[in-house]
Length: 120
Image 1 (cartoon, helix red, strand yellow):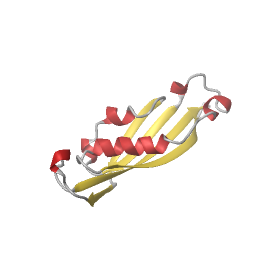
Image 2: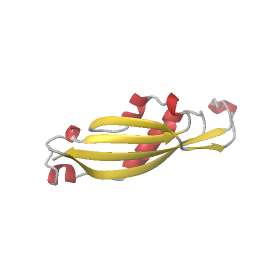
Image 3: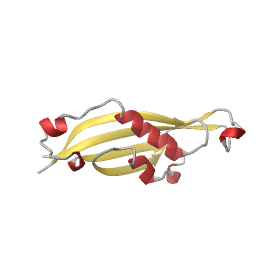
Image 4: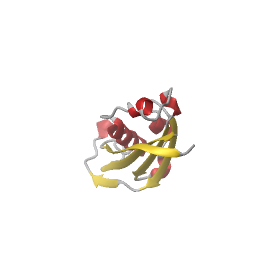
């Protein structure tokens, strides 16, 4: 058996207020998977259960060391999930709003790649 890539989706997420890289990362993953369906998991790859697919997530985000892995992977509804987080993404100067608990003017932008693999 060999792992074969079935689909790769890309997404972007932003935390405009709160300066939380986990929020930006989770939004990027949600954006990446928001408009797809994977009938090929059953019709082509022959899996019996969507949890048999392997889902590899790569995130590039500022303050990568602060990302809470479980919260990002919780966005994915199925699969054997793996996450790699690297420093990257973008910091854009926004506007701090005290009532939104901003720590500073930073808006954090994350980029995600979500790859679904099957063992066939």
